[in-house]
Length: 273
Ligand code: DGT
Ligand code: MG
Ligand code: MG
Ligand code: MG
Ligand code: MG
Image (cartoon, rainbow, N blue to C red; front, side, top):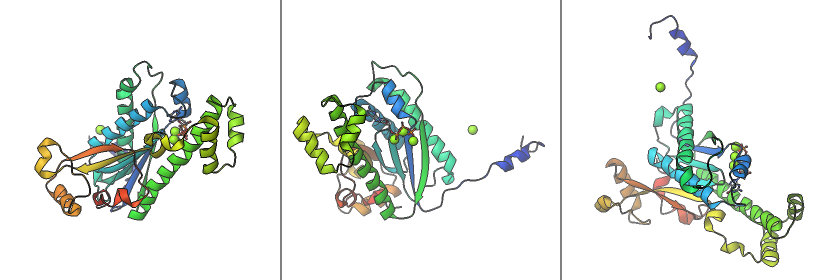
């Protein structure tokens, strides 16, 4: 049909390539999840099932899209880091973004009943998405630090807020007023002295969010699916070998700090190429 008199309309479809040789970060966020979490009875402030479902969908995305090296999730959002040299869909922005967003959303719906066996979906959830390109390792490190710092700030606020309501009998307005202008130490103290909650003992998942990392499977044991525990020596060589020989990788869900060096140092492969 290429030669028909109608085919000129194709020329209105403009290319939308993403800058070459830059990191791509795709962040998805639940659309109107304030309402969605209410209508589906999510526990407050954190619903373990809902977070596990997000992790499952994100892990599925990483299994499908091998160029994603790392993902970070909290609340109703997930960020995915593509390696710098990815040539997925010739780096066409809308192709990458729409495919990834719809795949994530389908997985969220597909696996819903595994996590909410007694709560039927009342309406179809949707996610918005954006892709941001970053030129440097520093910017990527800072991007993930920004999201994880956000997780911590929100979780401390929400934990205290809901304690004031659920255990302290305050209304939402009163709780907001109580918390207005408080620093983090005050919230820790309030949780402990008024409600006997030691913030340090709260689940790492809630405090740190979910870190999904691509690890490389040890070559000699790949048939057993055993992964290399970083640090191993020398990680660089193993990683470039992994790429050349197309060694297997696995994706692991962690709830650890990604702001400090300890996460990144033994995992050079996440930011190389
Ligand atoms: P948006 O993203 O602009 O379409 O609007 P929302 O409503 O999705 O707002 P957002 O993304 O800033 O905040 C996430 C909402 O999702 C927030 O109202 C709380 C809710 N949510 C996320 N995770 C949980 C959870 O584990 N438990 C409960 N109760 N609510 C949650
Ligand atoms: Mg949003
Ligand atoms: Mg949202
Ligand atoms: Mg959100
Ligand atoms: Mg088609």
